[in-house]
Length: 552
Image (cartoon, rainbow, N blue to C red; front, top):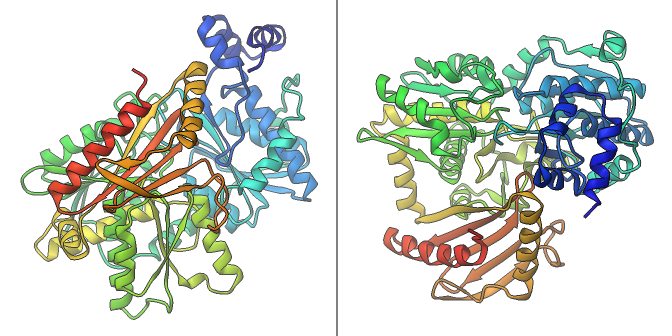
């Protein structure tokens, strides 16, 4: 821990930005400690933090410092072009312009979007314009006080672990305060060039090219949750044949305040309240929701007796079966097809993939690892073997036009699948029940435990350390028969990661990891059996994790 009082005084002396000065003046002792005790870490997902003054916060100075370090990294590799975009959050456009100006001041050509755009578009933009790197200012689905910074390589994939570590070494050598910060207008139309609008149409064409059917005959409600999907998602859905689309008016336009959905995460039922109300009013078949940067998709289904939200695993399994069955039906399923999922994603994907002769590759949490599998297949000339990838946190990708999850292509495919089911006289909910009956009942639920501030940070690290010295010996009433520590593992062909996995005799599984983007410990509980048994086993394991990680 740094001497936070000393660091705070340095900021009081050197800060010139009015918004940061205001934030400094409003801080109490606890907030000063939380904001200045450590630096905001540039991890494998880039930066993410609360927007305020402080070394552990997102502000013009930490964004400048990260970008100056990134520029030095680029220069060391003779990289000279970078694509930049931003989401709908407060300060995102301003931070994006600081990124662009800082890179330009280092003689790097920047292609910048004229308005906020989806994260998958940034991945496409990097690839389409053949840029050396990309930067997106976004905090994805975090609450409104957060913002973030994602860095991409030339494949349009978030940086690998080794590259992120190298960038970090350059960031650490950068002086935090530079007066004045690089001027955006000075470099505009010289080193900073606005992205051609034709690139957006190319992206939409690539999304539509992944279509496997039509969404005609379907009535849907869509909410962009005040994010960047407001234009592109409706356009794609209508071009995919969607007959009737209603958009939640209060959430239809970009707005970083997220007034009607303070936690704009499409995994959470609370974020979809207004969308479900509109669906009830219009008797819609489904609700589709993208998060503020449009890389995740939430789905709610009208069962005829009420509206039921599908979790990320259920949507992923539905899409996996839809993609594989349609490709097989049309004779387009490649030889030795590859499906990619994260280690915390439902094992049901394995049995569904097996039915179609597909191989499942398991990777660490983070869609960049799925993108990396596509990259490796491409290097072997086998890119077409990739058919689908997904993660339980509502991230999905069909196609190889990007190297990140894409809520837009997912929305299109879910609409198509729902329309197909409607023509067959059933709902998506009934269809997932059919798949459970066919492949087995797999229940996977995620429990998150929050640890705020410096005190929480220390408690979280202590609990994770204790997990290795005092591991779980049982899951419920079943003995643990196998434990995998991904931090020390040597037999698995995966990077080392702070993840523990416990497998029990009755087939239950518990995976525990710290979140890379929020102050959380996440527990992924998998149980199998009939519905009553899976529920009983889940409740027993959850009681164990509650006892271990709850600090209330």
